[in-house]
Image (cartoon, rainbow, N blue to C red; front, side, top):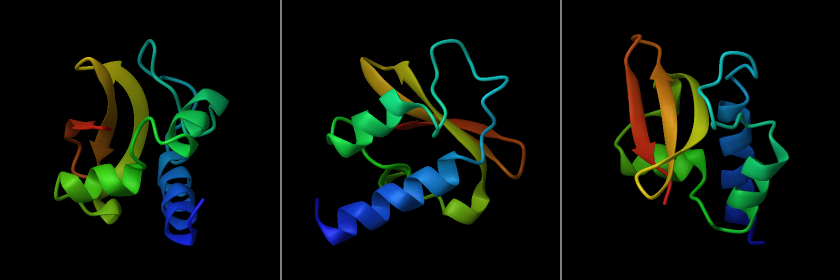
Length: 91
């Protein structure tokens, strides 16, 4: 894995770990979930940092995030500090 990919994965895990494992939507995974980590490490989904960048969102705006099935693949369900929730494509 490239150094940039490792950094992106670590940033993804750090931001994603802000979401608690309780209260997750059905079928969604927290950053602590081994399956979610494997999906990112294997390149099946983009890191949270890459997905946020594609959606023109700054990681400082994120209160929590979880990886959820949706749209024929996966989306990050991102709760912003403003209280809004957005589904951001993870592919």
